[in-house]
Length: 192
Image (tube, rainbow, N blue to C red; front, side, top):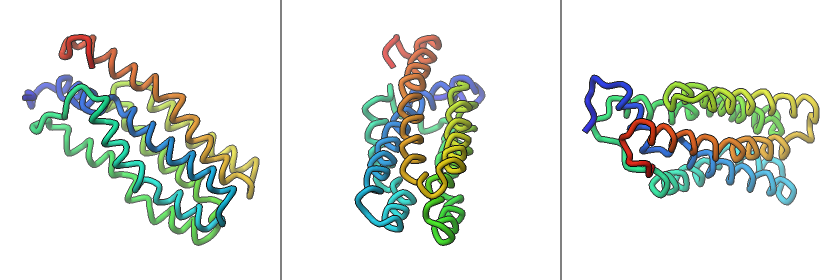
């Protein structure tokens, strides 16, 4: 049970139930990497569509990993539950921009995905009480932009590989932060 008037307790519950978001970084990093590899074997339009919808595979895998890595499910009465769901779904409303990018020039789909993903990560800095998500969002968006400007029409797979690399590099830090915060709160006996 969560005290509806205790913001710190509600935030801690979100962190414990999501393993700090690390399962999502792992799963999406994997699907982005697979998509990048497929670029070398399939037509651009096919791989661009796969990149746009790789979340269909990544999301259930992320939820599965979350159940394995999290300390406990989120409390049903957590007042931050609706906010965390809305934050998680915020990328969906950007899908029209990705579809337009696909129709105008499929080579730009990864950089648009990176921009959407980068913006999506920023509010998680507040939710999980860590600057790691500020670093993640900024690095993904600006790094992908830099690669696109530099590599131009050759950027497609390298932007996806870059996103994967950034996700995977920050995953252990995000997970470690969630574990440390859990221990520090005393809500979990040192075993998040």
